[in-house]
Image 1 (tube, helix red, strand yellow):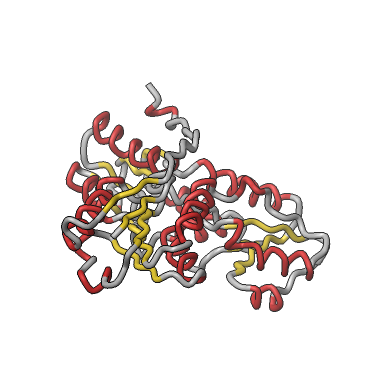
Image 2 (cartoon, one colour):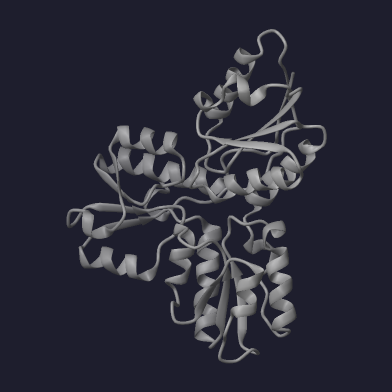
Length: 309
């Protein structure tokens, strides 16, 4: 059996930054440090930070007045920021800069009188934050069918934004449908798409030819991890999403001569290493591990000013 590891995989710059923000805040201010929503969608990461004194909440009302609250990498709406202000909370923003960029574009389009078609998944925390920037002017579009049903005041004054954890491939059909129905639509720039999402999908595509099983290490709540599973399945490759190595058993790898392994952008490398160890345990003496050439994505995001020194 061959085990092929995708590259790049796992943590992106936005996730690295968000986790570092919580860890530095705990060291500088001491526990407890409150975090609005899971800082990133990974149980291993969240449990590790919780053991150090991070407390995860869903609303600022759950935080004692005057405490420190960190906004997660997914971003928050103005309403959440206002609720934090009302409680006198000290806030540190761990929003991924790519998400912040989309928020800024939503604000600009709204000021200019545009209605906005936001391509994304209902209920995802990033989508909720972005829609909160201009709830009266943003329409969520999940499918091509949603485009046909979209009603706007002025077809010449519509713009499009996307959830960052979708790739160019994920949005291509919907963008084409929007362009066909609204020829004057302002389309998203390519750099609105998370570089990490696209890069991890491209790495999986390289592995799919000849692969019998693709294992994606990631959380069920992780949008980009789920897209990796979908990508493999659409190509006709069996795929399984796992959070830990314990979720893999002998039946999963039966008759699999070549297994691909990748990880979503919120997944630490230690979990990938445990998956590889589990596969070697299930196929003792026969598993050969191969790596794609290492890809340096060359992206680093600055820490917030409060923690920069």
